[in-house]
Amino acid sequence: MLYLSYYGLLLEALQAVSALPTASANSIFPAVQLLSSQPQSNGFSVSLAKNAINATDTALRARANGRGDIYTSGWWMNFSVGTPPQALAILPDSGDDGFFIQSTKLPTSLQGNDPLYDPDASSTSHLLTGYTWSGFVGYSSSGIIYTDVVTIGDTSWSGIPVEAMTNISSVQDNSLTGNIGVSYASSVGANPNNVPSFLASIRPTLSSGLFTVTFDYATTTGTIDFGFIDPTKYTGDIQYAPVNPEEDSFWNITLGGFGASGTYWIYPFEVIVDTGTYGSSLPQLVLDYYFAQVPGSELNSQHNTYSFPCSEQANLPDFVFTLGQNFHGIIPSETFADGGTIDGGTTCITNLGITSSGSISLIGEVLLEGIFTIFDWDNGQVGFANKPATPTTPEPIPSVTPTPSPAATGSV
Image 1 (tube, rainbow, N blue to C red):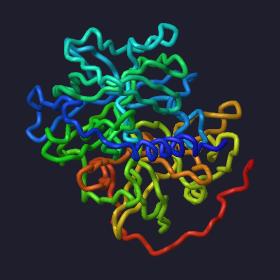
Image 2 (image 1 turned 45 degrees about the vertical axis):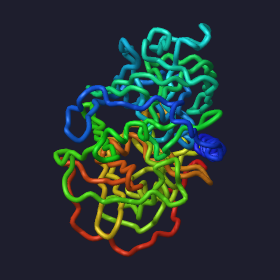
Image 3 (image 1 turned 180 degrees about the horizontal axis):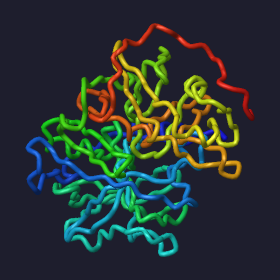
């Protein structure tokens, strides 16, 4: 299966709408105003929780690059829209630009059990007459655009563009209202003109245009901090990678290499850093070398990853990626080891898929759970630091470039 589809189609759509003129009349968009004081002097913090996704739902699975079974849970945060506030749940998504939510404007036949935004019940909703949008995140949706009061954590703003769904390709029953896009894009594709993205909308209220993500896989809780970096959430130095210069939509960066079991290889490869997808995908060469460290592992074409004896699951090596001359991002194997069992429960797989040919690799939630991550919108870069509980690796990265060598002969 070729899963270039999600990012390929989304990139084409973003390129198409980027050619549209931007709104020139400021009166179209009410000025965004901060309505409540932020808990931190420089920004605000939002709690995250991991919630299960309906196993039959295809939403966002296309991003797994070949692993249709990889998207089984996601990081959610609570927020509200409107006056009085309508409590909803949303997925903070660095792999998308839109702030789109299910609404009461959907036909009754397409309204599932998820909470819905009702713009007619909000005294502060403002319809942008004539504005429409469409998007794709594993399911297709489209609708109209309002501005309204949005509250995330203890912070509220007025005048935030909200994309209310009026059509959706399939009923969603996950208790999740939609996505809040925190991609690298500054605007969201719409007709007749683009509208400001969420980050662009709130940027004037922050002292710094960045947000950080930290998540504890053991407790299934975490935080997103907007506008500041909390030094208690990481150890050692922060290493940054610039967003690739041709990119204006995704957090697309180039890693320097990878390692496992104390061996490191210089092997630059592109990745998209995506908080909106649970699983991750890596180049086959990377997984070839990683699983060469795992006895009994073999390439499994059915699941587009490596399988291995379940007796080895507790012994999987940590995954290490490299940046610069000395930085080792150490991701404990516990974050990605449990991808389920096959063959009657004696064979296991991880939540790491193989990147499809022609696609860009994906650093999703299971890898981000092991590392402290900074999305620096102002400076066009992504930063990483190890978490306080992560052991540091002192040795420098050797100048070794790997050549393809399968870890084992498998069912391909």
